[in-house]
Image (cartoon, helix red, strand yellow):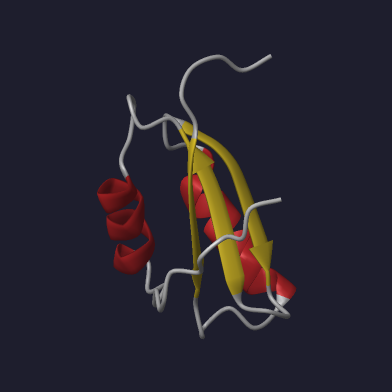
Length: 81
């Protein structure tokens, strides 16, 4: 069971086109402390990352992805359930 604060970042990336791209992003973020979940959909080019903001930040996560060549486009606005 997870405790604490969880924030989500949700964005599109045009260079996510196939399952291998999704796997690469998940591998790059697997060891980052504070990241709780990474969902990547190559069909829609969307990435959703859940993280603990008391441990890591959106800025750090973006920096990691960009340093590995992942182009981050627009942030996707989530609609309330």
